[in-house]
Amino acid sequence: MRETWNAARVGLMVVLGLIVTFAVYRYVDERSSTDSGYGVYAYFDDVQGLVAKSRVLVAGIPIGYISSIRLEGNRARVDLRIRGGMTLYEDARVTMRSLSLLGERALVIYPGTEGLPEIPDGGQILAADRGVQTDDIMVTVNDIAQSVKKITAQMERAFGTEEAGDRMQSALRNLSDALENIKQVTDEAGPRIVHIMENVELATDDLSEIIHKRKGDIDRGVAEVDDTIASIHRAAEQLNAVLEDVKEVSGRTARGEGTIGTARGEGTIGRLTQDEALIDEVEGVAEGLNNFVGGMNRLRTIVELRSEYYALSNAFKTYFSIYLKPREGRYFLVQVIDDPRGSVSVSETIIRQSPPPLFYPNEYKRTEISRTNRLKFSAQFGKTISFATFRFGIIESSGGLGMDIKVIKDRLEINTDIFEFGRRVWPRMRIRAGFEIIRRFWLLAGIDDVINGGRDYFFGLQLRFDDEDLKPLIPLGAVAL
Image (cartoon, rainbow, N blue to C red; front, side, top):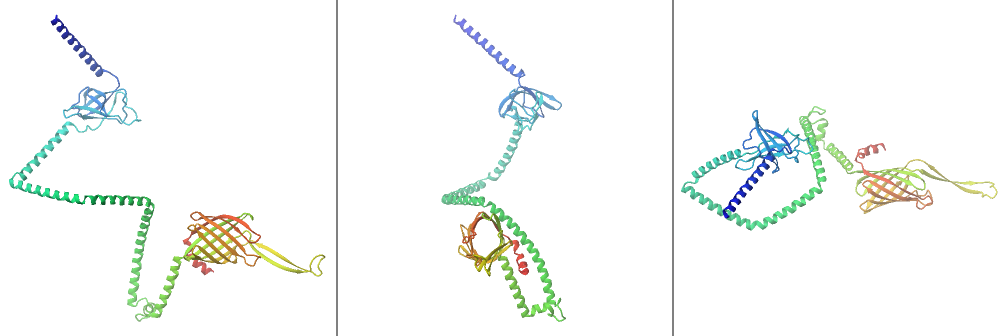
């Protein structure tokens, strides 16, 4: 009974093994023969190491297998089956890679760029460089082995004797001593080097921050340097030309040429080089011309355009001003004013009646006030003392005085003018305040004719800027005057 049971168990295990073997065979056969997914093919020059049913990988993950390999012409055609969930695009590539040193190979696919046209079922995928293969590695290893063999032979010739061994031992001992000295030096200088490197790092951070903040200034500075170098180059060329002319003139002077007269040193050039009085006069003229040119270079010309709206008169008043500043702390002001109220003139007439009308006096005085619409002008001299500037001269075609106070880095300016003395009971007094809202643009407000009955309020805008182009016109204007 026991022997029968053992035989039955052996027979049962054999049947179960056959069933499992058949199931595995069917699974593998179905996997290899299924038509799921879609097929593509590629051409290779050499498919050594590839076999049918080999894996096809993307990023190391199997996504299909090789369905067949056959020869077409002188190239190998490899047909692939790709899973249905994988999409290959027009720029997809396939390459052959070695998976181990034993010669196992597989195909690796780059799917391509999403958005391009897809490769259809049965289409071709292009083969890329086959990469480094096992054969290439073996050839490289063989070359390395040959080089190592040559190096070994050379070392054997160099160190194969006792004398060479002693020299090698001595060199190693010297090297050990040198390394010990280097270690001692680095141990002693290590903290200093660390401190120095920290300071260098801080300095580079500060330098980087400064360069970042001043990048615009540095760029402008570089541009100015380029312009300056170009100007120096042009000036050097002009100087060379002038020196050539001077050389020619000095040579002619030394030879007595170019003068009026026959004797050497006579004529204009001769007198210029020998007559002390004439030389002194020339030096005086040159010095005066130098002072004039220097003063013109130091002269600062400021143009001011101002427009004010008078609220009660419902009119605009316009100023055109030029400040001439030969030096800091003083200036000359020339101004042209378009005043809508014009120029006011007052005339008094005493009328006597004989006999007078009934209930009228024998004598009475008649006052006539007339206005003429014409431009006014101002010409003043200003002197700055601390934060205040005092002015004196002609203000709007009449004598007057003025004072300016500047505060808040000269952005807030308060002007006071007193003029038109004797025309009315009290002189005309005007107070104006201006604030520079942005560079060169000012916002104005003030009150005019504060003391008399013609008081009016105004506000306006002002533009003030430096104009270097006016300097050459000043001598012409002086000559015209």
